[in-house]
Each structure stands twice: as C-alpha cells, then as structure tokens.
Image (cartoon, rainbow, N blue to C red; front, side, top):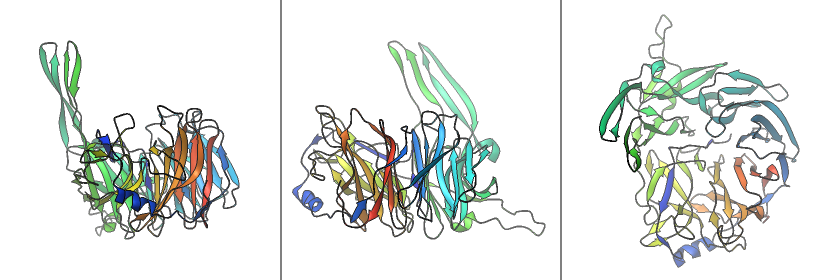
Length: 477
C-alpha cells in the first residue's frame, strides 16, 4: 500500500533560506556524489493522461498494480484516470468541484482491495469495487486519509464549539494615527481529530491538545508506522494582530504559528471500552503534542526562516520517521541557500524528523553545478515529489532547470532518484529537457507500488502526461 505523501502544507515544512556567497562544494563532497550509481530502472512509454493542465493532482497505485490519478483542471471537473501495467489509459469524469482549488483539501486512498475514495473540498467520492459507479458524499470535513490494516481513518480539524474546547481572547491592538486601541475577540480553539470511517459517517477516536487554547491549523502531515501508530506533524496558532495606521503607511505584526509533533498509539485508535449499559466510558482518546525546535546544525549550518510547504515529505512505513527533500533557495544572481561558513551550496537536501526531533545531519541529494546526465547546470525549480516503498526505499521525482533561468532560456527536466539505506542514487531523467518559457510545468506526482512506480507531471501545452518506472537496466532519457 502506498505510504501517504504529504501535500500542500503551509505550516509544517522546513524552508531553508540564506544569503551567503555561493562557492564550489568541497572536493570530498563532489567525489562522494560522483561515486553514486544510477538506479536500475527503465521507463515505459510516454502516456497522455489528460488534455488540460491540471491545478491539482493526487493518486495511488492500487493493490492490483494499476495507477489511479485524480486531477482537477481549470474547468473544476474532477477526473479519474486509470493506467494498467501495459500502459492502457482510461478516464472518466466523476464530479464537479466548485471550490478554491488552491486551498481545498484533496486526497485519495484505496481503503481495501478495489475500494477507492477521494476527498475534494466539501465532498467525498466513493467507488466500492472496480466497475461500479462513483457515489458523492457531501459534507466532507476530512483533510487527509490514512488506511491501517484495511481500517480507514481520516484527519480533520473540528471547531471548538463542537468539542467544548477552551476559550481565549485574541487581541487586535495598535495605533490609528495618534489614537491607541485594543479590541478583544473571543474564540474557542479548533482541534486536530483522528476519526474512523463507519459507513458514510466518521467516529472520533483521538483528539489532540484538547485543553490547549491555541488553534490547530487546517493543513498537517499524517502517517503510520508498521505497528499501527500514527505520527502527526501540525501547527498551532492564534488570531490577533498589532497594527499601526499612520503616515507614511501601514505596519504591524501577527502571532506566528508553532510546529508540533504528536504520536498516537495504535490502542488510542480502537473503539473505547464500554460500561455495562453499553455507554462508552471514554468516547475518544486524548493525546498531547510537543513543540518541534528548528534544526540548528544541518550540513554545517543553515538559516531557517519559516515552516512553509511540504509536498516533498513522506513517512517511512516501517519506522514512522518523517523524511523528505528540501530545495534551498536564496538571493544573489544564481541564488544560494545552504551555508557552511561563508560558502553557500544550492541544491536539494534530505532531512529527517525522528520522534519529533530533527536530525542534525542532512544528506545531499543534488547540488548546484553537479553534472546530471551530461547537463552542466542544475537548478531546483520546484518542490520534489517523494514516496516510500514497502521495503523503506525512498523514491523522488525532482523538477530541474538545466540552464540559468535569467540569462538563458531555462530547459526544464525531471530527475528520478532512489535512496536505499543512507545512500542516494545518481539521478536519471524521466522527462528530457524542454523549453521552460514556452512549456512551464505544473503539478507533479510520484506513486510507488510493490513492483513499479508511476510518474506524472503537467505541461502547459501537452496537459497531464506520465510514464511507468520499471525495474531493469538503467534507461537514461
């Protein structure tokens, strides 16, 4: 079963920013990179999945080995695309989604063999088995799915009024010209909840930080380990602001969100013990998270500016360790992002969160100016997509810009890499370079199954395209 990758999280991922002068990496680091081996894979034929370039994509590889991709385009139509092992593509329209595509929840799961479910904003669409129709279930509150031993759970954020959560006062204060003001606004804190599917309804099993006055943010990461324990990375915050309305302009500050980690034991997800009369003694379990401090000594030092976006993170299905790729960014003509003294190394790095603590060491995945398949320049141009296989191997699809994006037309490409143990492979090209200015890519998706992987990406002119990644002798593109 595919380990859930996390997507579109605005509060729970490390964004690394620095402003150092870029220098060549140390010779020993280049030697280690050059010693890496390309993964033993070959690529299936290019497949046209959807004629329009989608705004959002999610997918799974089902237990029968088929790739399932759900895509929503500018028309706000939800498409289901199915690709079998031979590369045969079938598609269907399963509903309309009249919501903000950039911010709505969007996730999919195979809850049991052949049973598919996708959530899109305030609706879920359910297909019992292959060949049956899709049923729309309105009133969705779920944000993420998680299937454990064929039991389906979802993570959601519930209002404080529903849970009887603590109240607080958010203060909006400041100065208007020369007049000070302070306005309290009473609120009840929203809470992160794990619920179990029961037909078309959901039964709460665990509530996180129930007595904390802060709000759980609507985006979070959720994954399970081999013992059925659930690991959560989420952010909490509050409202309020300090504002100054005075010439020559407007200034102010708002409270910053805090990142937290919580581990939910598998026993906490079981139905509660009942009294002799049949009433539950405790209708749900209560767990508390703890704050996660920012990493301080990754690869010689770095500057962490925010906890921003995590399309590049996934949970290891064996250990529950959160692992993923971070592309560094920064200022200057060519940009920097990773600091070691005065030297900045721009590239893609592998970071780990173990039981709520960041590792001090980050592995190098790609470095700027490290040759990739004969290309002289590597520029991380977008968020990588990552997913684990059942044996703990981490697979990555990294969008690249192969020429300088300011002085030359940028040639876009996609690299595929695999990590086994502590060692990353060399990258191989899934998509050959194409002109960035005329054909900007959009959404990317990497699905990992038991025997094969599936990569999909959006191109402005071609729409959504993809191809199988198969075991075998390396097939460079």
